[in-house]
Length: 354
Figure: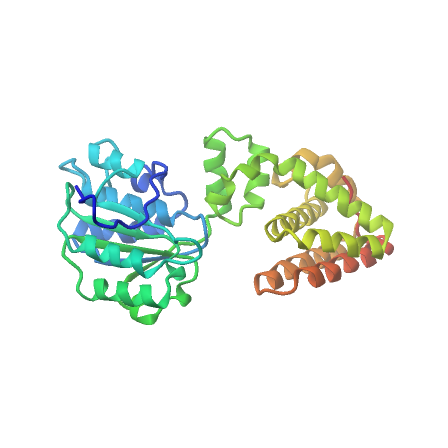
């Protein structure tokens, strides 16, 4: 076991059980890459897992650690999830598997130095030591330089896994010494099937998926429980603002812009609503709707709206979301969006109500 007086990397022991690679949802390509290396005995000494937040990078890193340390004799490309080693890793209790998280806003040099010191020592009870760096793009320059020393001369028993949403933020000297594995946003059908399998109502699952951005982490966040009521409240506020005029819309834009995360969700609500209007306009298949619980209202609105108006409005909303991703001014972007929707309403092209 580690000595009491030696500094250890910051570890989060509250990891959920990943169930090996079997618990990785919608990332078959990434799993194949990792399992191929395990089967052939060609695992890298350092990996860079790159992809959006909450799509399974950490789950995959823990699954890799389980496979490398599984005590079951015939386990080659996946952990058994049942042996003592696999269970310890799933619970965040294995001394040879450590998750290093940012200390505040950054990963600091002291954390990386502690990692390097521990990496130099042989495993305490497992076959391989695995260090998982969450938010690797948050490393300070000094921390990156310290990590580079470990990556340049890695002990044979050590595997370092960097998790990042922005690989371009990492120094090329770090990236070049890692095997990059790409993680994509999870496909809607795979995410919906998973949510339904966990017991979530089919209609609610569709709504959650529409607002998750392909992130299972976001889909499972506590806020999703109130998605239906949040959607209804937003649509009610929007409908009232559209009816009351430009001054009310500017006030609404200011209020919505103050909550950046909530703003994204509200725009996804509106995008999903307009998408449903489009579906209802060209088809009577209610099972294709995201907002199935309000299917009758969607059908009524779609009946009185030209398809071109719906498509134009949808493009405006999606364009606004793209602009916000590129750091456009939230309040000004919202004002422009809402006033454009108001212009459509004034000519009878769009109505949004609760």
